[in-house]
Image (tube, rainbow, N blue to C red):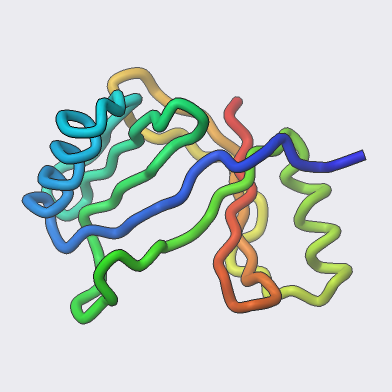
Length: 131
């Protein structure tokens, strides 16, 4: 039995709020995606856009010198974050952030349980449980 429910989102880091707004305009106004939620101001801003079968998450706080178009992380939907992390630890993967409950301060608070590991190819994997 799989611990996962599917891909929840791919995350992109934009160089500032203006670039993030341009990305949102493209995906929403040109491609027809819908904004699910947004939070923060300035470089602390973030948003989630509905692709129809998943989510693109955007952050305005990219590090200077980042590669254009670089995906920050992939998030796998699960309701078993702790079990996923135990399986990753058993495989010897590097734990970046152990399981943690958070609430993203959106228009409607967004409670989550999340955790991060470094995958076998160096990719960043987030295990993502919407509460």
